[in-house]
Structures are given as structure tokens and as C-alpha cells.
Image (tube, rainbow, N blue to C red; front, side, top):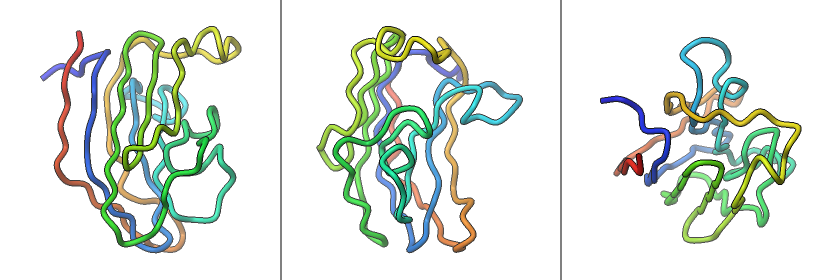
Length: 139
């Protein structure tokens, strides 16, 4: 299956205490995926909003901050169409950008690429679990 450029991604995740991972969107198959594309952060580590759950890692802060309680299942939905991006955690809108290129003109936003799940990479040795993953192409 080819990765759609425009999509709605819906899933449940559970992060253990100290969990730190995410979802890569429109990333290249070479190079760091959070640089070549975007990373929607998943964590329960104490972090600034630009590195909190639901944020676009190091680019767009989570506002408001999502429920980051460890060891609970949470629901995440991402709608990405053209330059419009919506991220919701447990039904709460965390990021809503109708036009990324207008709001953040200094950032190069990819128009296509692969999707990826990042399990965990923190020193705390937490884990991230995923279930009920659904991808709807809008292409």
C-alpha cells in the first residue's frame, strides 16, 4: 500500500511511566523522520508544550496540553490534508492549523512521505503501545 499524502489517522496508545515516542508523518525513508517530516509527540515525561503529547515536535506546541497520565489508554486522531493539520487527543483539539505554510512560513512542510510509529526512545525505559490503528486516505 502506498502511503497517502492526505489522510485521517486514528489510534489508541498507552505510554508506560517515562514513555516517549510518537508518530512520524510525511517523513522521508532516509534521515531523521522528525526532521524530514513531522513527529506528533507522545510522552508523559515532564516537558515544555513544544515537546508534549500532541505537539508537532519542536515546531508547534500542544495547546492545551493533552492528558499524559501513564499506563492509561488514550485516543489520538490526526487529520492532515494539504497544509491543514488537526491533532486531537481524547477528543480534545491540541493542534489546529488550517494552513501550516501561512502560520509557519519559515518551516518547510513536506507534501508527501511515509508514516511511522515510534515505540520508545527515552532513558527511562518506558514503552509505548498502539492498538486500533485506522488509516483513511483522503487522496
